[in-house]
Amino acid sequence: MLYMIYSTDVENSLEKRLATRPAHLERLTSLKEQNRLFSAGPLPAIDSEEPGSAGFTGSLVIAEFDSLEDAQKWAEADPYIAAGVYSHSVVKPYKKVLP
Image (cartoon, rainbow, N blue to C red; front, side, top):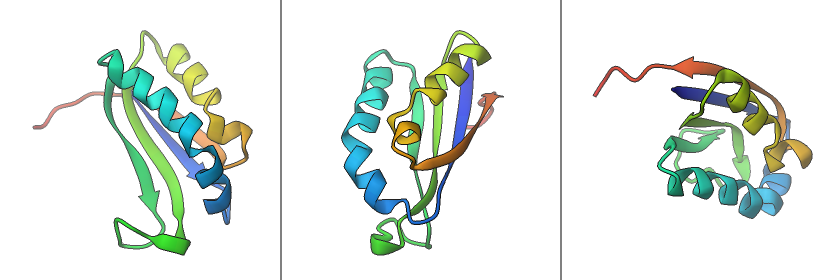
């Protein structure tokens, strides 16, 4: 089943994000290689794909996991949590309807 992981950044997270990004992307790449990643990306703090120093307010990942518990464990192990980028994450089942 698909699950969405919506994570919210702490204030002024950009420096921590940039430093931890390689480890964060490595985990997402692993999901992609297993054909389990539906979509992933950051949430710009301003209305721009390249927010520069404005940074990001969080991230959204939609991926396949065996259970809600597995999705929560995966989210809790994100390097952005250990680095203090995320203040919290919400994990919920996701049902793709369109397109």
